[in-house]
Length: 113
Image (tube, rainbow, N blue to C red; front, side, top):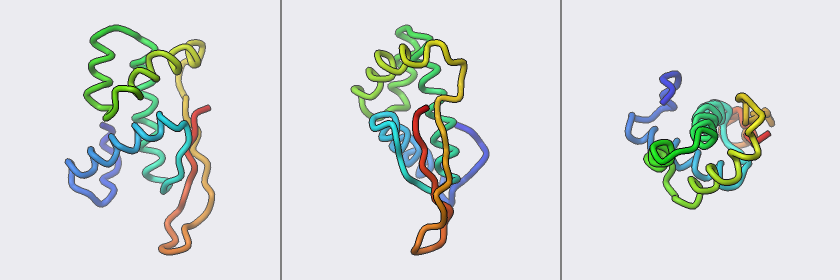
């Protein structure tokens, strides 16, 4: 995991939250969240897609240790590996959309390129 941001949570809470957000993001291809969480999710999603591009049983098992649903891991290795075969990185895009109404947190949309 990238060691940049703690996101106001303990290590196990943060890891569980990011695992679930990365899984949901890779399943749907788009997500709206805070800007700092979006940057963390983007970095981890890029790593999962890179694992999918270098297919093999070891990489598949490594992705299953992080992704919480097997159908999403299969989607990474079947669809995203072919879609991003020519691309060397930068599979995600983070776009700021302004502050949230309740607490003025900077919101962003993260999507697959």
